[in-house]
Image (cartoon, helix red, strand yellow):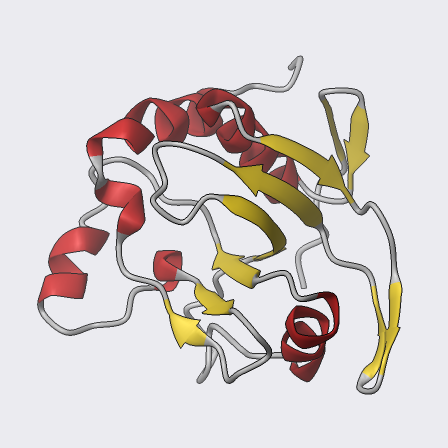
Length: 159
């Protein structure tokens, strides 16, 4: 197992470089975020979500979201697992919960795979009111996100 690289960005110490890249992505879009703002005792167990993010334009689905960042592990039979705590938090907090897998890179071809009917990992999942998580479409390929992806991908974090 590869150990995550702890990374500092925006005044926060992230447990992984991947989480820090998502913070860069949020900042690039002007979305406010809090890293691990609070933990919850849920019926399915204790849980500390990675981010609480306030989405605004260019998203048509603006508002607060819990966001969990997970690495994409292509070698696994199920590279994008689902955790029952995600549904419990969405239902209990009345705040939609999104899970994102890995980090999209502009030009990585995932939009073409989506159009071929493959559920690419960058799509992520969302549970709005505690229902079973649904795959998100390829929102990341829309023009307003290109600059944010490029910023997140190219950030060197002081190295």
